[in-house]
Amino acid sequence: MTSDTLRHDEPVRLLAPDGSFAPTPAAEPYLPVVDALSDAELEGFYRDMAVIRAFDVQATNLQRQGQLALWPPSFGQEAAQVGSARAARPQDHVFPSYREHVVARIRGVDPLDIIRVMRGLTHGGWDPYDPRNGNTHIYTLVLGSQTLHATGLGMGLVFDGKCGTGDPERDEAVIVYYGDGASSQGDVHEAMVFAASYRTPEVFFLQNNQWAISVPVATQSPVPLVRRGEGYGMPSIQIDGNDVLASYAVTKVALDHARAGEGPRAIEALTYRMGAHTTSDDPTKYRTSDEEQSWSRRDPIDRMRAYLRARGAADAFFADVEAEASAVADDTRVRTNALGSIPPGTIFDHVYSEPHPLIDQQKAWLADYEASFEEGAS
Image 1 (cartoon, rainbow, N blue to C red):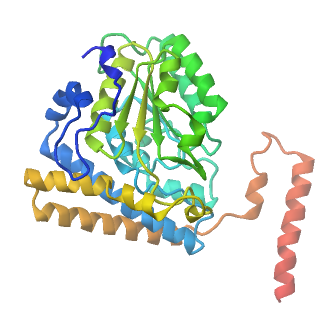
Image 2 (cartoon, helix red, strand yellow; image 1 turned 90 degrees about the horizontal axis):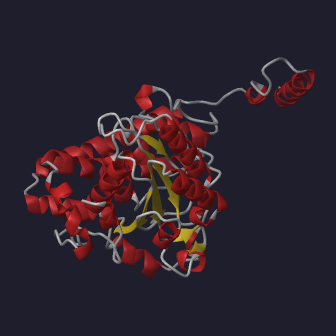
């Protein structure tokens, strides 16, 4: 498959909304990639999606119960994330935004570390250089900046000769996730300029979930967002983001080309944010129930379930997945409730490498202030 096949005029889709295997013409070049998947791998895609949705719903509930300061739901975007994450090799580097919960889990990050971030117990969550976390960099709440970080690392891979060597077992690539709203940020465009100029081994994975908080994608761009990548000379392709097979196949091919030293690629995954932007948002203020119902009929998990049943997946498999999803949700609730809090004075730690009198003074003032509440209660 040549890099020219990465550009099409219609979305790549292999699974129709009803779960039938109905490749669009644009999907034809990717059929060998999908044909190579085993039953176990296909069932693994479904398991990933179902389990993370249970985790996501539980985390949303925990925020409503006051256990988290904020939660960004991934409900509805599971296929785009699972397919792309499973397409990456262990040596690849992953830069998420802030709702790629299943991407982090697939790469080895403990989902509780995501909970810790949203609870305010840590500024990072996990060590991206710990081998157990699969080269997964920490969440980015300053939207769009992760594309610059990813491009910088991609440039380093070029300079260090870690891509394009002809050894696919050793060559490395980068995949960076961002949304349709972030695609309007200057950081994203600057990252694309440098990625194209230095031919970084990078895949820009845009999850177009139709809404940048309350701004619809039609307001953000008069043309399909996939064309932004083309404007920088990147082979770019649009996929049905609710089709996990399309996400996997297209991302795998894009990463293979990037790793081989053929430069960056851009993918626009058409999906939908079924929940709120975050738990501080009320989507009923800006979108209709008809729109939500229309997208719910294209649910990625329902689609994959129907496909697997048609292939002969047993009821026992689905029951096992449901049990695992319930267990993960329960474990999330139990471990979150056990996290507790951190001392208020922690905010002053590590501001400077050496003790600083002003910091010490502020920390002492806060301690006295907190103590005053205890005195008033006694």
